[in-house]
Structure formats: structure tokens, C-alpha cells
Length: 103
Image (cartoon, rainbow, N blue to C red; front, top):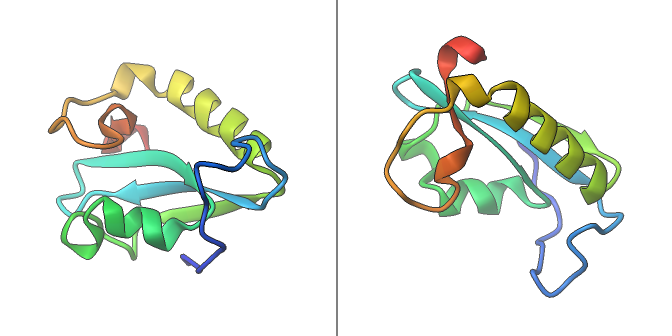
């Protein structure tokens, strides 16, 4: 379940000790999903298109004790899923989309 967390400011240390979410947002068409991190998943989801773009019932969020830990997990998953990366419209976070068969 997605939950509201503190808003992240880019002026802060990006490797802060704030609890950070690693999210898996499943596309509305169920063909692809996005892997990313955010301190405030709701704000991030809204910037990416919200319910018009994602199936929230199928999407997941895992919280990590720090941004550093979440970033390490995200980068590891991007590496593992690299062969499943899909092309999409060149928008914010477009390199983080993967074929649903990888999910």
C-alpha cells in the first residue's frame, strides 16, 4: 500500500538517513512496470501521471531505513532487469521501465 511520507527536497543530501521507498509501479496496460525510489511516493506518482498511467492495485512499495539503502537496491534491480528494459516516451524516469515478464 502506498503511504504518504515526508516531501523530499533536492537541496537535501541525496544519501540522507530518511526512510525511503523503493517502488514498483505497474503500467495501466500491464505490459511494463517502473522501478524507482522516493521519499514521498504519492508526490512522485502524481508527477509521473498517477492513476491514468499506473495500476495502483498491482503496484508495490518497500520502505528502506535510508535513501542510501533504497538507492543501492534500486540500482541492483536496474542491473538485474537490464535485459528487460523497454523503450517508452522520453519523459522523467523513462530509463526505469521494464517488461512486465521481468516482474
